[in-house]
Image 1 (cartoon, rainbow, N blue to C red):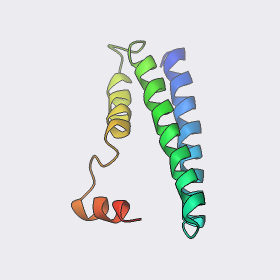
Image 2: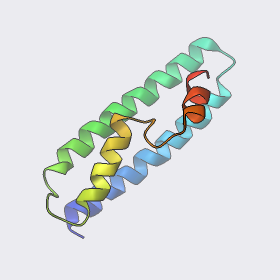
Image 3: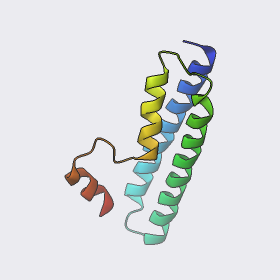
Length: 95
């Protein structure tokens, strides 16, 4: 693995940790509509930042074994419902 890839994966781990904390916060705040909306907005902002970060690194690791992994991550952030059943999508949207 290149240093660039290692740095990218470190950032992705940090972002995933933040996302799971935000998900927990959204669940805790789901009773207060304003608080929930704020938490969801922060999570959407984090997803935008992640897409930007992954897009930035995509050019740096072309033609490496890590490229497919990165493309999968990027696809997830462009379409978070990728790979989910229709039932799972519905359950996420009604929260």
